Amino acid sequence: MSVARQVVVEADGGSRGNPGPAGYGAVVIDPATGEPLAEAAEYIGVATNNVAEYRGLIAGLTAAKALFPDAGEALRVHVRMDSKLVVEQMSGRWKIKHPDMKPLAARAAAILPPSSVTYEWIPRAQNKHADRLANEAMDAGRDGRQWEASASTAALDAPSARTPSPVQGPPGDQAAGAAKARAALAAARGAAAPAPDALFSLAEEPVESGGEPVESGGEPTDAHPAPQQAAGTPQAGWGAAPDLGAPATLVLLRHGETALTPEKRFSGSGGTDPELSAVGRGQAERAAGHFAALGTVQEIVSSPLRRCRETAAAVAARLGLDVRIDESLRETDFGAWEGLTFGEVRERYGDDLTAWLASPDTAPTGGGESFAQVAERVAAARDRLVARYAGRTVLLVTHVTPIKTFVRLALGAPPEALFRMELSAASISTVAYYADGNASVRLLNDTSHLR
Image 1: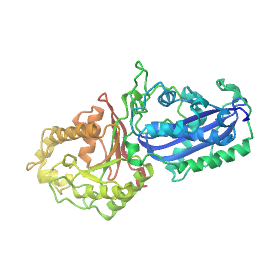
Image 2 (image 1 turned 90 degrees about the vertical axis):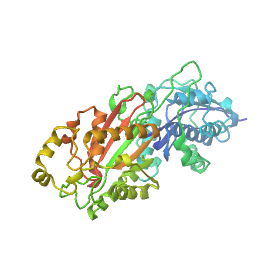
Image 3 (image 1 turned 90 degrees about the horizontal axis):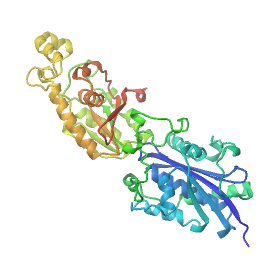
């Protein structure tokens, strides 16, 4: 007769971007002592919060089964997670409607007999061990490696501080059990998982039971807060209101240098359409490496001008993405000022320049484009892009004036703010747009990737 074994599984998963670089963590705990019997964590590439959470559950149940392979139906596992979605779905109280989520839930349900597993929702503050493991896995993926148990810095709370579990039981042979768990988890990593394209399409499930709250995981850059962020700390701006859903995140990359850039010459959409210089090509390659390391960009859209198309192509080659061209992202047409320095324009068209600096409705000499006209087409492009890429991260490769205009509009700043922003070649600015119409600017003129 099998000896009754009782364990607690705590599991978690997160995605920095939702979808974005994702990982999970799970720990099997002896309920009598609070000591860990086995740990599991893995970086799983680009996925959503829900996928990562389910993968953490699967890993935790797999490890628990491997610890006591002879226990059979005598094994009792109490799962504790801070994902109400997963807990309610696996408990059978909420339906699983998304076709890509169903295989994950079925895979978790098949590991142990349903009668052997119970589920409990806990606050994130009580799930620190699994949370740290998930973040370690995501950090490892960011650094181009997989998580290893020997590298774990996760620290269990003192057993006395744990919320009492409804199960109790003996600890078992920890060393032998942990070895079995590691072997089982290694084998499980090779099991079927959702295809990468499917991971992008996963969305949070709607609630069907009397208006229960649903987790949205909607923070734009780190939907799974890092462990140093205090649980329950009110957030505003960039990290605000997960119930608004994941924003459309526009990453604005200015093109690399051309021969005209260091000479500070007007270079718009009505000039010679210069190519990138050798310096500019190097900047584009470094930007490509930066975005490849982040792993958050899902789409690329570029201005039609050559310097942007070349910059976008360098990034696309590293990320394996296509580039869409959007005419609205082109630079201002500077008319007769194209190719001239500011001083040369002052000398030749002094009155026109003064009027241009004084009013956004004034166009450059010779039929150029006013800043008011640029703002009108950029605002239309913004609305179109936000609708198209809701909940996703898109890289826009464009120019000084469009980027400053995106930022100005997001901040609600007046037109004269355009003259108070500096924007270096190949710099990065980021704006997130939420479902309630609000926007949040995270970066402006970031060139750290070029150093």
